[in-house]
Image (cartoon, rainbow, N blue to C red):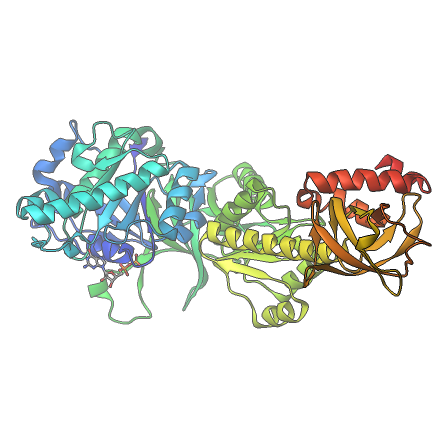
Length: 597
Ligand code: GDP
């Protein structure tokens, strides 16, 4: 039998923008009539029955012509983009819809942008809750009422300020490629992002928010939400945890089918699929019925999607958060489920001998998201695994470092760094990049790579001689001293010279080293094409080795030449290149290497 299930809804946004407050407010929504049925607490999720939405909505329902047939809305209790990325299903996100919470006074922040990027990637439709409108100067709070009721009570200045702030948001969305508008001005919900001004704290605009989500799901997701209720269940592990009296349990969101107490389930473990038989299906006891905190759960016989449920079963110790749960009733179904799960795990948890970075994340879903992001940036991955950063990870990065220093790092999303790992990393100078905003972690890594490259270049630069061609002035007046050291006036014809550079004649014979460069009274660290300076040459005697009017060259080495054309190419300007060509001609008389340059 087919039925339409509740859409699963996630709440995302920057820290402190009000995600938790919003979820709390939704959980505590009260409706007048008893028959409406209450909001029910699932494991890890909260269900708002459609009657509640309809009651709250009143005349707002007319926003959606046509009937809403959904049974309700299922909100995932853990907000944030970390949880969202963790909760994968069907190769995408477990959530059918999302609410992006933005503090209207603070606007876009790093986690707002991260959330939008993630929603875009997963193609998850979302609405925007522009939160904390009660903070707008002069706003008169009409608690628990729709935004459209509130706005009528405001004076012109507050309305104006709200509009200005909304425009700023709309502008930001536009920069990211989204058409956004205040929800009551949206013409086409498929093409425009709806912004609902709300105050989570005072319940303003929540009726509209719920109605909009319900309507969007009904209108655009109906097909996706139609499920074969009786079919074997499918879900995603939210969390693996110990429960007194039950051992290791898994908290699961079921998004398809029905899970029965006597079902066999297949779940993802670190490097295997775990097949196990359900011992108990647990749901939270209503708060007012908990007398003894040890008995916080009620056992149920079965549960149908969409729902959040705790499963007690043997052998769940190694189950992985974020991995799929598939119920199976026949041998064949078990085998198929095992294959599917193993395939998924193997595509995410990788272990190779490649020269690449070490990646860690808290769940299989977030690991996949982070790895994908790195791959898109062409950053090779040696190992990707779930869990905190361990000493082994750092040691592995160390072995990579020996081959390619820029990849000898550990990158972690939403994980801790074990103490011993931290110690080794410090001692062996292995950088660890951790955080909870994927693009920030990658940005940090890229910034480090850039700084390392600059450093290396600086070192190379210090080691490398640049080519230069100079001419001793023909006039004897500019021979200031003939020997020990010889001091002569010159002009740099091409390229550059520096103190310490050796000089050679046109036939390739080395005649001495530049000891110093002087212009008027100043000693210079460098002279470039066109500069007329005096140089002291250690080792050369005027009249014997060098003569007025003679052309001399910086005697660069093969290594210099190779570094110049390879690593330091962008440091060479036209005159350096001409100097290099002329130098190569001189050197080629004795060494064929230079004719190939
Ligand atoms: P989260 O980190 O996104 O989950 O944010 P919280 O829900 O914890 O909220 C952060 C702070 O903002 C708390 O002090 C809330 O009381 C406050 N807050 C949340 N929503 C509102 C709102 O609508 N108006 C006002 N004035 N404060 C709010």
